[in-house]
Figure 1: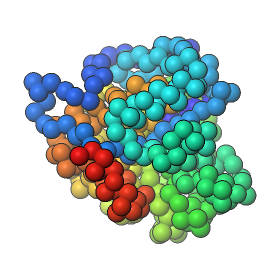
Figure 2 (figure 1 turned 45 degrees about the vertical axis):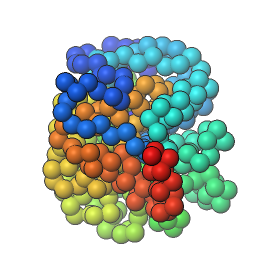
Figure 3 (figure 1 turned 60 degrees about the vertical axis):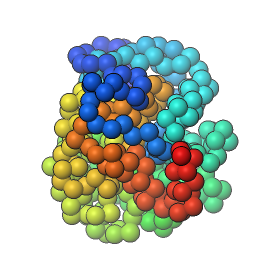
Figure 4 (figure 1 turned 120 degrees about the horizontal axis):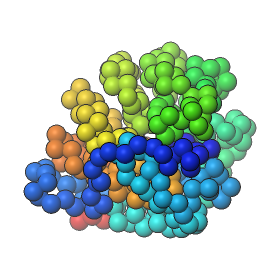
Length: 324
Ligand SMILES: [Zn+2]
């Protein structure tokens, strides 16, 4: 989910209805029979917002913005958001994190932060950032917040840039903001604009493009299965659907992709914006999936992203050995 203009009032009236997830990664054996993954994690979807972002108005405020009814309270300042996010990274052994806007956080943990920057910069600016080591992922690219389809010609140069620089592009299709976003902060957003199969010709024209679909293209499960079958280079992150949806719906969607055979191209992402607790909830949402084996969880939490990001054998080994 992007962020610039989310209106607290809209969020505060949003939905209610399900179970509060346990805030610990450990679960009681009576709750589930499956094994809990506790190894290194790569979070492919984190945000660092500046003090002047649209999220600032939500700092220090408790609000519910999900289909679960759970309320999250943001820390009082963006500095605290950063500190608490890194504390959660430590707690959960998050060894790498793609942080959109991560330039601001890089110095706090250079070995961990993968810097993302989006299409809000010009091609010239992005090339300069890349040359300075400040562009490792092109994302989060989420033009649909402004009603712009991926096929819009204004985006062509960004897909081409990802190919030219040989860096991943993180593309957001749906959901767009909180439920009912078109009636509040995002008047131009439309649900049908999030359909993943729109990407087909873009992919065909750029077979070497390293792309992942943020939030896994929810709720278009059939489209995503078709897209991932037809285009084996496409990866997904779980993103916000791991904590904004009911646990049942999240598991239904995840199971659909895994059962279809795409378990090697699903990556964990928390979409942590200003609520660090969502990292914990997102991890627990995957760990509580009784239909996943421990190996499948390891793939989702670490191995698939390590492959997608082309981490070296030495780095992978060091991440895994840290845990021994
Ligand atoms: Zn996001």
